[in-house]
Structure formats: C-alpha cells, structure tokens
Length: 174
Image (cartoon, rainbow, N blue to C red):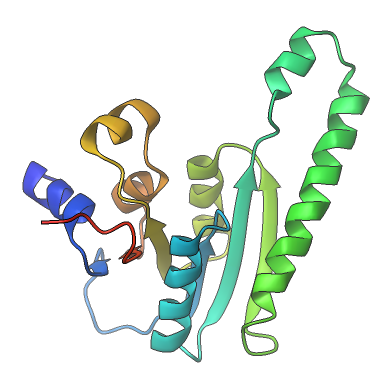
C-alpha cells in the first residue's frame, strides 16, 4: 500500500474497512485480537453491534516478560513452561470474562504464547476468518517504525478484510 493509504490508516479518526476481496459476501467468522486495552474493548463493541450473528474468536497472544533472561540465567525449561502455563491460564480467564459479553455460543477464546503478529496470522488461516476487527492505538510514525504496530502488520498481511478501529481517546487531533 502507498504512503497515502498508510497515512490514512494511521491518522483517520473513524473506523476503516480494508477490503481485500470482491463483494458480495457476508462476514461469518470474525477474529478479535485483544490486548485488554480500552481501544480493543471498543473494537469488540463495534464488531458485536455491526455483526450480531457472526461467530467471534477472541484471541490474545502473549510473551513472558524476561523469558530470554530466564533462559540466559540458566532457568530450566520445565520452570519456564510452568511460568508460561500460569500466564496462559490467567489470560484465558480474562478472555473468558470478555467472551461473557457475547451471545452464548457466538464467541470462542484462544490464548497462545508467541509474537502477536505471527499468532494472528496463524489464527486467520486456522479459523478461516472472513474479517479481522482490530484496534489501532495511534502510534506516531516514529513509534511505529521503531516499535512496530500489530494493527499495521495485520492490515498489510491478512488475506481477509480488516476493520481497523481507532478508539476516540487515541484518535489524532487535527
């Protein structure tokens, strides 16, 4: 995508739908990546309002803090796996709380360890997703360049349509 489209994705104060396949079609399987932030909750609300009959997959990818340092310090793999399993269980419980806001049976949850953009790419394929609804946090160009942007990665790599939702609090000011 060109620089105008990238700037629009970064700066637009309203939700943007990036269409990657020709209509007509219905969104039946929707991926909702979350980092448990207010913008992610806002994106989920919009998705539920727009697509009340869709099957939602709430997903969260995580990495253990200090994972590499534990290995460098010689912590054995079993101990690292114990910490990872505990973190995954806690995150699964948080995700289940979010899923409770959805119609019974319309939302499933998935938690997986690993780099978020890679895990989202995997879920899109595994779950045969029609639409990804993802929050944008309004990073500056410099922050996005140095720190990366999960939402920008998804917009660029997803084979399906993507609804990019910017929370009103993080929308850029004119």
